[in-house]
Length: 551
Image 1 (cartoon, rainbow, N blue to C red):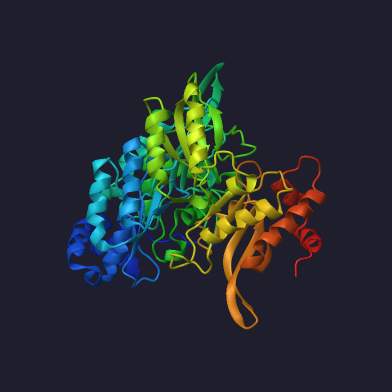
Image 2: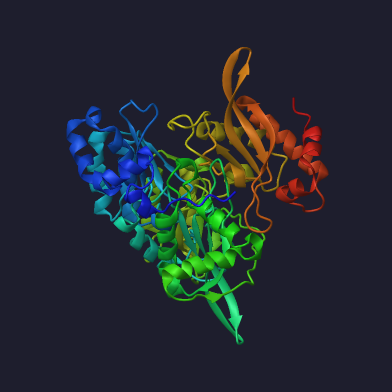
């Protein structure tokens, strides 16, 4: 059943019952809390009002677990994951001065700090502002950090460099009160990458590189998918059958964003994400037989002009890449070096070391440090003559740019250590798991992507992993212990799909044994060079579970 809900105008006019969150947003815009943050820094944690705790999310600030601890988590907006030397150094300064010596790279290429106190926030804002950074829109019902390809502008195989369009979109969305009261979080990706590594399939609005031939002439521009997202009701984005010229990217994204703002659902928080509206509109248009065209027409109503139609989309066979290791750039004589930080955890002054290495070894030009949505980090624009020196220093620091397949394929959310929603520890457990797998399962030489989420919110993107683990609890000898539900077969790109539950409530300490047995089943039953995802497509789950023989 399709349940089209009242629009934003009805909400603002008080014509429908308001959720507490919608009432809070109408009473004071989330962006207006910035002045209160500075006031609370003087009056202390106990003086913060309940609604302002929520509004502080608009500046990337969340209460850390437990909520009354007096500590905060903070995310810093990093558009496209691109950092200058000075910005990397500033993030390191914050890490060391205020965040207990560590930070995390997130799956939206932001930097996340923990252990911050309200009294610290003004000084942190000052450090960020000095290097052109901020936290606006890093959380809250607003346009989040805009994600792109980490090797945009340097990848020899890219369709086009999406950086100008990404920065234009980010500049237009960031701190823009036209889009500071959305129904829920709003995630955008913009990339000209040939393999869609910015994951348009799971973004609210995903702009991707597209090339076509018209009258014998090749033309390069963009396509767009809308309505993707994970969490407890995951949905893959719908393709809109249009060709977008580079100069049309922001107007189109603006139109889509206004649709979400004005027509998005606000009656219930659990179905307020853009994906629910898009799904309903797609069905109204006929689903596979017209849903995409219906979405295109809705966008054009906002645009005020027609977009060129395009339906011959080349589906990417494999969207998964980690960008790790040493790679040639499109620029003659330059390379990038991808360094692995499993689960995104960054310790021991790593950002400071990386900023110094970038200053020492990188050619002048674009931002030399790039964060990836696989929670890793790249050092780019390295002249060939500088590679030996850079690699030697990375080796000396213990930074792994040639990691094992287990290490490079892992993604993790924050977990129960800091998150108020998580039910299981993830990040530290994943780091332990990698060591166990490298020792116990070193016989396995294939690719494998293992993701951990501490709860159904799926911040670790477990639904798109080869093997995805979702936090749970189970009873052992009368006591509740950490456990995980195991899902297999997720992927984006060709034959995109979310993974399926294979086995529930695996005791956390046994996860490495479960993975080892599962990989042995795959090795025994795969056909030729069949990937793990293809194997799970072909072989019924019951057959896999029987062969696994897991009690």
